[in-house]
Length: 157
Image (tube, rainbow, N blue to C red):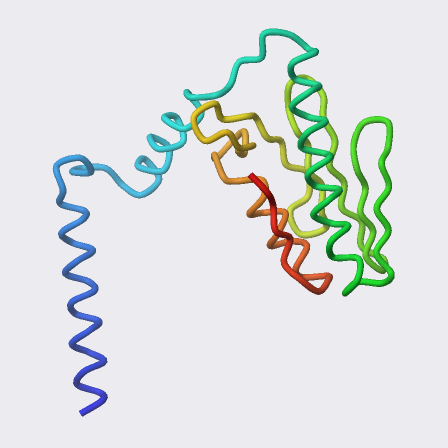
C-alpha cells in the first residue's frame, strides 16, 4: 500500500540520518557544532588581498558581472532600473531596492528579505561567501531577487 511505502521510506531516511550522525568524523557533535566546524574551514580559506588595488579590481569585475546578469533580465522586467553608484550597484524592481557595494575588503549586499549581509572572497571557491556562515552571495542574491521579479539571474564564471 502507498501508506506502508511512505512509512518504510521515512524509516529508511531516519536510519540513513543515524548512520551519518554516527560517522567517525561527526561522532559526538551536534548540528550547530558541525556547521561551525564547516564554516571555520571555509572561512579559513579566504583570499587575502595584497592591496586595495587588487580588491578594487575584483570588486569591479563583480559589479560588471552583476550588471550584465541584471541587464539580461530587463526584457522580462520592464520596470527594472539598474544604477551604477560610486560604491556599487543598485537594482530597483517596482518598489523593491537591492544594493551591492564594497569596502574594507568586503562585499555588502542589502535586500528586503535578508537585510544587510557582508561577504568575503574565498580563495578556494573563487566566490564571495558570507562572512558569518560561508553561504554563497550569488545564491542568496538569486533567491531574494526571484521573490520580486521574473527570471533567474545566470551568473557567469
